[in-house]
Figure 1 (cartoon, rainbow, N blue to C red):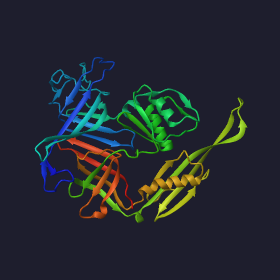
Figure 2: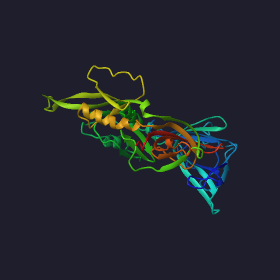
Figure 3: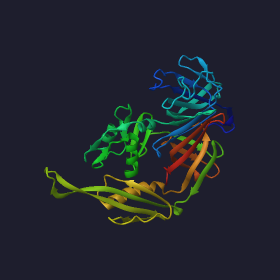
Figure 4: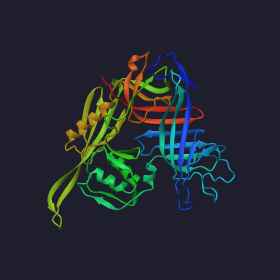
Length: 407
């Protein structure tokens, strides 16, 4: 495969890039097969696809392996995948080679020779997680999920958190025994919050649905909160139209044509002046809610009082936001406008496809440059990357979130 040398080199330099894929599968013992512990290594795959995003709790993927293939075991010895006694996915009495719950790591990239004639290997970890399903047909197809798969199998004990317990206390409780660390990106309280008779992932789903708190894994760290990106984290990579942008579904939109709105809310607890039988002060919980709209540079605010219906959204994008620190409708509105104004810009929206390098993840920044139409130049936060690889080559489909340099 030929394509242009990485950005910054003269445009007349072309090199041969050879795709490389290395898949490591670590067998995990099960009740039926307690002695499964082999580490398998594959350097070939028909195809794989996987994602890196904060929007869906779970990053998922798929891998397709031909049966007429060799794997490298933990001793470095090649073994045939097509052996007559090989049980691929638990469909016979033999110990299965691949099984739901096995760990998997996909590393992919390129090998090439630089201008000095040195061979360079440029790879990155595209996916790390677990096999969630093994197909029974040939070619062998496995479905994959990241660490959230383990939280879907992790039951949570009964507990009601106090009004003073913060998000970090909840995360520490639901993650106990998993070995995962956590990062509470929005440290706040939730009132009397109860968990139990559910999995750790279901607790995170409730936090997402009720409060708009997104959860995602970065390695073995679970991140959760209304804030998504950590300031200063991530890299900036260059992408050029007519060069390493292969195709795109990008639209150049002027902010005069954009309408944005958000429903922001919070809960305020106030003393009632009454007490319970055991002498505890009684409180009442009041919901503060406001609809803010940004259209043609004009901001409008509508308080949603008890019994009111939020007006339907007939144009533009609308978000639901939770601000635990806001004490008044005015504070809610100010915080909501600070959030939606990030998306009120003249520039590109959508996604584009590029090669496997430069490698990016969600949270990185795409520096998009167009030598022909420089008004399309800009820095954009990346909210999702979908990776594909295999015999058809390596690709990244990059979805933009918002523009950083909005002046």
